[in-house]
Amino acid sequence: MNELKILGVVQLIVVPVLFVLALGISVTKEGRPLNIVDYSRVENPARLHGWVGRRMLILPLVFLLGGIGSLLYPAYALPLLFLSTIAVAAVAAWLTIGSRRFYQ
Image (cartoon, rainbow, N blue to C red; front, side, top):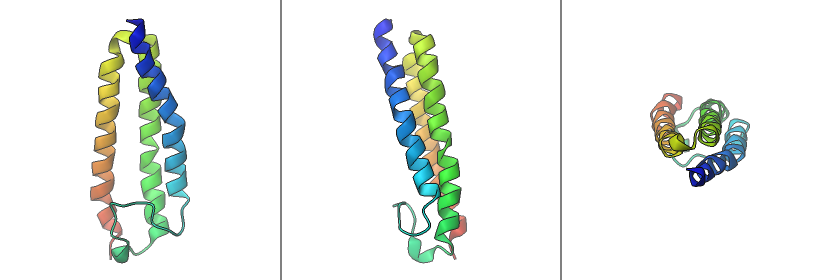
């Protein structure tokens, strides 16, 4: 079972990457960091980026909890990784649907 602890380590390695990505998007005033958005229709890109960045902060938290849980309970490493992956898909869908309210 100890070989499953590597999944926890992988999840913990991803945490700072996701955190920096979320913060980077939330402080972007100009530019087009989101490819799911039609920027020609967005009224206030800075407000949109702040909204997206704050919601993306959920992902590092999910991966942090999953990584810690995988290290403490290696038998649950695979289900926790699966739940983290589902969280990524759910947040992506939430951002895609929710970004429409920033359109003109």
